Length: 299
Image (tube, rainbow, N blue to C red; front, side, top):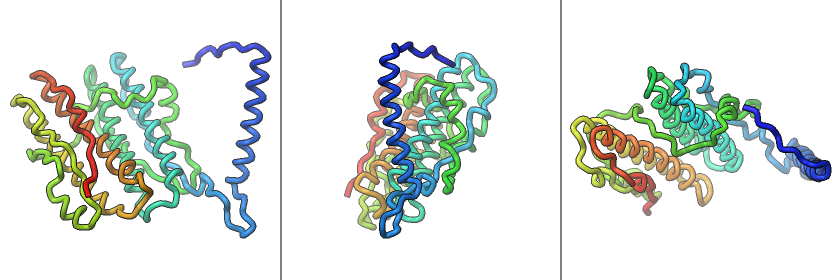
């Protein structure tokens, strides 16, 4: 969608043009340094973007069926969000260069990105499925890869994201259907067995608010889905505790928050939303459960 550009008087254009020329000159100088300027010792003074590589993800927009008009806005928001997620992951890739061990990128960047993409493509499928056949198999498009050569862009969804133009709306309607492990275990809130992995290794353990105890009476028609998602909440805590142990010593002071607790809160929010939605289909939908999504690290 094209928009008419505002008209400027000649003086303003000249000022803006001059500022742009200065910025461009600075960018060229900076680019020259990044492109391989070396110190007197022969050691590169900066790591180039090509050295870091970039993250490439499967294109989701091209795999969608015809989108009902009633779902278009929500689909557009989530396509934009997919691109935002890739951009953020690429920024983190640059910001954390040199940190961690051989599995750092997979554990701290690609893994959390895949989790976010699963939740987002599920929201797209759910939006379409409300008034048309729900597309299946979109989860297969969630995993992304690191292009170590840095030749690729920031993902193939750039075009779809630009066309969407509605902004990244992380609060879009959550997925009502996702692949969760079966079972009926409840979220214990502090991950049973976490001491065997986190505390025993001296890394602490992740503690999360108990969701099951905050739920109202659960309709019989929603019980199975609620149980699956309570089990998923516990699985998410277990996986986060394992990642806590696997990445011990990696990153800076904000590593645990950015690479483990932040992604865990995102996943818990989506799962808790699914619980509220399943109850709300046949009873009053519980409110305020999102406040239970954030977890903490206990030493």
